Image 1: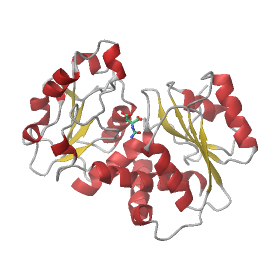
Image 2: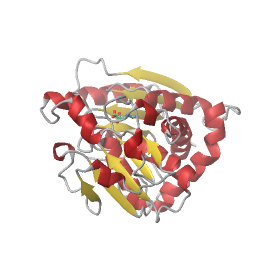
Image 3: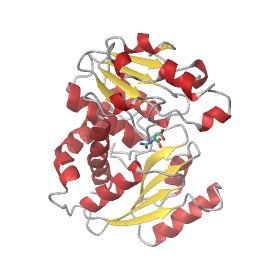
Length: 315
Ligand code: NCD
């Protein structure tokens, strides 16, 4: 069983996916994140809206930026933070995970930020949580990473304005295994993005219908022509073992974003990457650190977006 993320009145109870989230809800979260951005970055005014609330980051998979930025977000809103690293737990069975959640819930945790390697695992935990407990999906399998989708939209909005209708956006790389790409696709569609191009080797593109309405190509040069934003994805190197990629050199030659290639995009195009980056594989140093890169802006926006989400759920 999975949980509904909104209650009968349409209020957000959990944030599990951007799929089906109404545009008004997306815009409200993005507006609030934009307003909180200054606090999120500088931490100037510590807010107290979540004083007395406890937030637990419960990660069954490793993470650098997502976990740290949720931790900062919770603390900047005045919540107590409990960081629980479940990635070393001896079992990944649903029953044990639920016991962990129930145990921490009994201690008085109000919100769980959960990352899990299994698709649907966070929604299942949400369905089993007590009525007042909120769950935030911090990435499940290859399915959803809603706060990454939101922070990517905030970064796009800051660079290109709130009207996505004229925008051409390319999503490049290992789309098949990417929960980031899926959340970005849901959000770009909901916000009315004019053209979404998806590019990668055939073996790394999804075949589950998620690309409906996108322009799909295996030719990176064609995908980049005139785009306003390029979203690069991590080549999940573990896929090489599965034989889906021949070699890192071949991948870089065909799908690596270099400064020369980027010149095909609009002159003011921005480059995004959710991290962690494989420099020299999907993205060159010159692009990652270049003037069009918004990679660190994405990271900064992550704190603001996560503040907005925690506030919406618990405030
Ligand atoms: C991504 C993730 O874990 O889904 N990283 C992130 O949260 N910023 C992307 C990835 O691992 O490739």
